[in-house]
Length: 165
Image 1: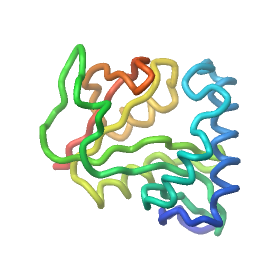
Image 2: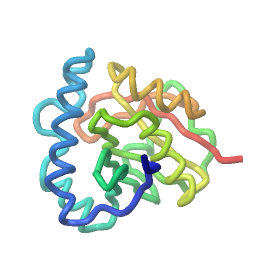
Image 3: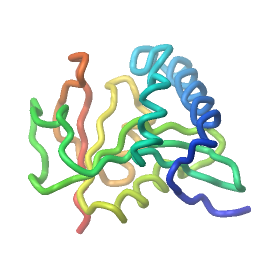
C-alpha cells in the first residue's frame, strides 16, 4: 500500500474530482448536513477555474485520486469580517476550501493540512455548523475556532485557523 500524497490537479483529473464532490455531497446529506453544498456545489466552472488557476490539488493513494481541495494563498474576502471572535494572527495566510474525499482513506484531511503547511505557516478554513466531520478533522489537527464568517451568499460558517509554531 502506498502512502497518500498531494499533487496539483490536472485537467485529466476533472472527472474524478467531479465524482468526489458528488460523493461528498451525498455523504453530507446522509450525515445531517443537507444544506452546505446542496446539489451543485462546487459548480463545474469553479472546479475548472481552480484547476486552470493552479489552486486545485488532489490527494492520491495507489495511483488513484482519493480527495481534492483548493488552496489559495492571500487574502480571502469572506474572511475580512469575523464575528463572535477574532483571528489568531494578521499575518499572510493560506485558505483551504472545497476539501472533499471519496471516503476510502483515513487521514486524508491530515494529509491535506500537512501539505498546506508546507506552503504557508498560517492556515484558515471554514465550515458549515452542520459539518461535524470537518469540524472534528480541523480541531483534531489543532485548528482553533475563531468565530463566524459569512460566505458570498451571506450564510454563516464557523471559521478556524492554525498557526505553525
